[in-house]
Length: 502
Image 1: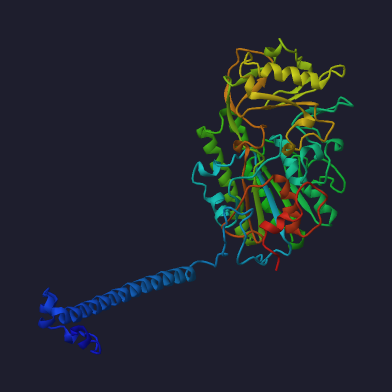
Image 2 (image 1 turned 180 degrees about the horizontal axis):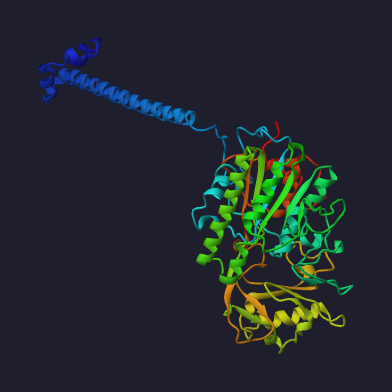
């Protein structure tokens, strides 16, 4: 057979590709079977060779591209000011682990670890995006940030949260359950000017630090003026609150501590700013005044950074910047009036210890709290009370457990949770206003604030999931290497976000 005659012939080569073979490829006659087989074999070989050649070209191009890319990354990293930690951000994990460079940077000048805890009151999460804030952005870029904000404790009010931050305790356990409340046994009233020790439970950080033979300095932190345990609010290291003191003076006073002999520098310091909470109450969270206030806070952070850099200690200091709560806009069209419940139950003003956003009611001793709750909720859900569906009333022991707001006799027996942006008032009036408020359920995203950690114990460019502010107490004690008092935070939490000491 013609095809058998070519069985042992060598395969076609480029030199064998001749006009005769081309002619054979064009011949479809039955008598040319041998030529057809040979021609098909030659054509298949040529196609295979071309495929191999093109594949080699493509592989070579890809290899060259990859080499160029890696070279660019290598030389870019080599020319940068300093090596950045290698961070792995796992969005779906409980915490984003630090894969490399997990060891804290050694101190260059200071002899001991130092923490400056800064509070910007009412700094709602998201305010950091309102304007270009180069100094806060610098802390975030070179530090560790709660990517979706810090979660305050309930109620999301100033005093309960500031004291939770420095004790690691929920309000029911640290005693400051509201900005204002009444002791049901003595009838004594707590206000934000109350400094009697009986109100302030737990062990705040400044007391913990002093208990370990170290020094602390506080500047306007709620509770810091209370003489408690080993802390006697020393004149040199404890400033009594005065809202008229300019922010610049506060920053400069903290910086002066670093002019002391190295071994005398306080290892823990607090710094407090009233803004942007002040503006938030007046105009709500979306007004240009908020942007101006946030820019001013950023300039104060810049003033602090500049002062630390001039003293050569910026890289040695752990800065923790937080807020105490967020802010939400309110307007008088979002109102619920207790007097509208009169067809179901009368709620005298004398029963009400707090209206909004935390409704707190302590009825007369002869009245059953459970009966009050039942009748109030019946009226609120009837559809006959304006905005009634936006308020739900609980016996405190029936509140959602996540709020941790029942284990104190100071908490009134009846607590009402109002919807985001709504307010409770006793009766209707002609007074109309729009502004901002906080104190709502801490599950509302609008109540979140910020957490940024920067310094030798914090990884650079790291994002971590949101967490409750009660964890900060253990973070600080871990940085300082001291044993903290019992608290509601997790003792292992700091290990998950701090770099290990060398």
